[in-house]
Amino acid sequence: LQAGKKAMEMSDFVLAYSYFDNGISFLRKKHWEEHYKLSLELFDLAARCAHTNGDVISLNLLSQQVLTKSQSFEDKLNVMYYAMCVLASSSNLPESIERGLKILSRLGIDLHGCESGSVEACVQETKDLLSGYSDDEILNTERMTD
Image (cartoon, rainbow, N blue to C red; front, side):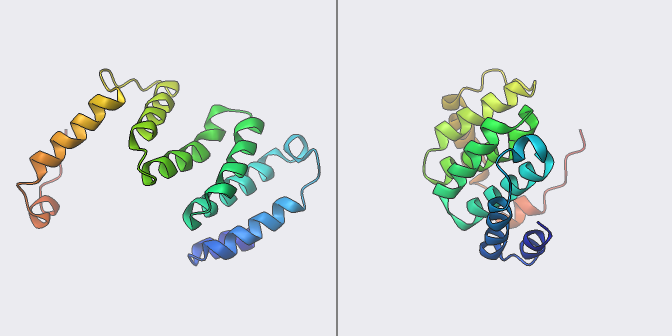
C-alpha cells in the first residue's frame, strides 16, 4: 500500500497500479469483512490508477467490487466518480451528467430543473457567453465573493 502511494506521488500510476494489484492478490477470501478499510483503500487506489492509465476493463472490475462490498454510499463515491469520468471522456457526456445528478441527489443536493438535456443547454449557453472573452480576460477576472 505504501509503495503504491509513493509511486502515485511520483506520478508513476502504472507502477502504483501494479503495487495495489499485488496487495489485492495477497488479501484473504473474507478480506472485505476482516480488513474492510485496507480492502477499500487498495481497491479504491487501484481503481484510481486504472482510470489514470486508461485501463477501463480493470477499472470496471475494481469498481464492481467496491460497489458491491462497500458499507456506505460515501465509500462508493470515488469509483462512481471514475466511472463518470470514463463516460465523459468516451463521448457519453449525457449519461455522465445523469449519473452525476443522481449521485448529487443521493447526497441531498438537488439541482432543480437540471435534467441532462437542460444541463447540456446551460453548458452550451455558458460556452457561447465566454466565447467573447480571451483566456487572459477570463483568468484575470476578479474572484466572486458572494
